[in-house]
Image (tube, rainbow, N blue to C red; front, side, top):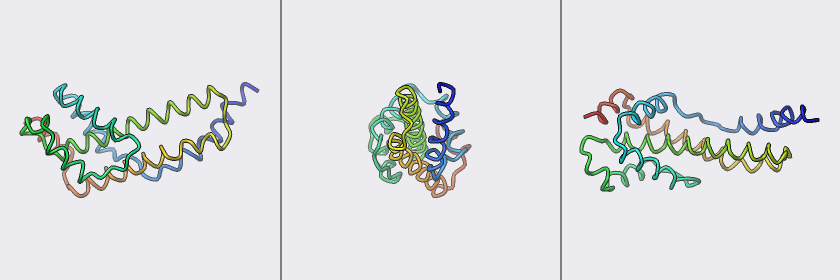
Length: 156
């Protein structure tokens, strides 16, 4: 019976996992990895804290960008572009949602709860991740800027 638990878990988890309609653009993830290496610790921690505040909220990239332009921490950095910071925050929020989803699934596995009702708990988080990915994709398309140009804005 112990050996069947992972199989049962996969049977119920895979259909739920496939509900993520949009995946994060690879370009955004690559930009995030490169940018977080060169950002000052103060900016990096601000990106992470804003992303934590977005947990479970509907995110509008335009309004987020406007808030970033008003933020004093980012105002001090003349070379930083609000669009680049917006993308970093959205990617960090997506990574936070990944971690939350992983934690939720592990706790369900530890509780040995593989009922369909248990996996319904993951649905809002999957929808949130999907919305973030869609928002990220739309932001990248709207800005029509490659990750290389965004990195230039961070390095200046």
